[in-house]
Length: 72
Image 1 (tube, rainbow, N blue to C red):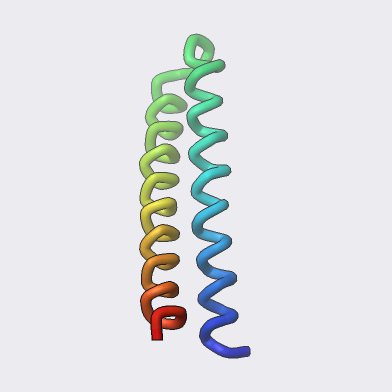
Image 2: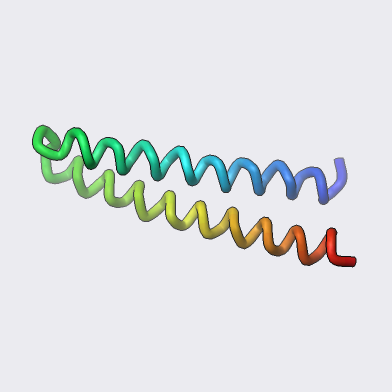
């Protein structure tokens, strides 16, 4: 496997994984807020922050990929 193929797979996993994780965490915070204990709310906010970091990493991977492989 070449680096370009592996980089593309990593970009897709990070980008769409971040969307899924953020969506699930925000949905749980919006719908289950009254029934969750305090530690559950804190863990969901941790997942929202983690999903944001994964989305930023995915966007950076896409930009690096485009700049390195497609602009030459």
